[in-house]
Image 1 (tube, one colour):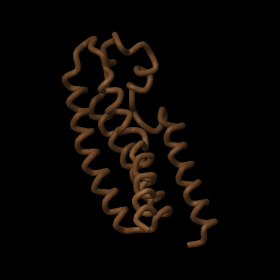
Image 2: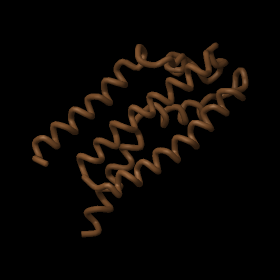
Image 3: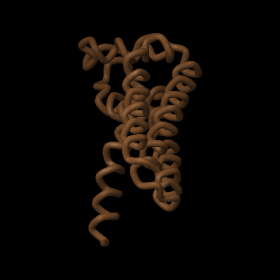
Length: 144
C-alpha cells in the first residue's frame, strides 16, 4: 500500500477516535461523565439506568476497538498482530467489563470511586492502542 495512503488512513482513523471523544455526550448514555467532573470523592453515584450505561460503555469499547485494530492493520499489515490484538482486546474487555459491572452494582453510597474511574477509563478510551502500538513496533523491529 502506498505510504501516503497509509498515513492518511491512520490520520482519518485517529480523527474518528477524536470524534468519538468529542461527541461522547450525544453518542452514549453515560451519567458518570459529569459525575467525575465534580467532587466525586465524597459523593454517591448518580441515579442511572445501568443497562443503558453498560450498553453505551460496551458500544464505545467496540467502536474504539474496531478503529484501533484498523490502525494496527495499517501500521503493521500483519494478521498475527491483529489476531493477538483481538484476543487481548476480548480478554481485557471481559475482565474490565465484569469489574465495572461489579463496582456499579456494589458501590457504597459515599465511598471513594477511584477504582470505578480507572476501570471505566480503560473501557471508554483507546488506551490499549497506546500500549499495543509501541509494544508491537518494538517487538517487530527489535527482532530484525
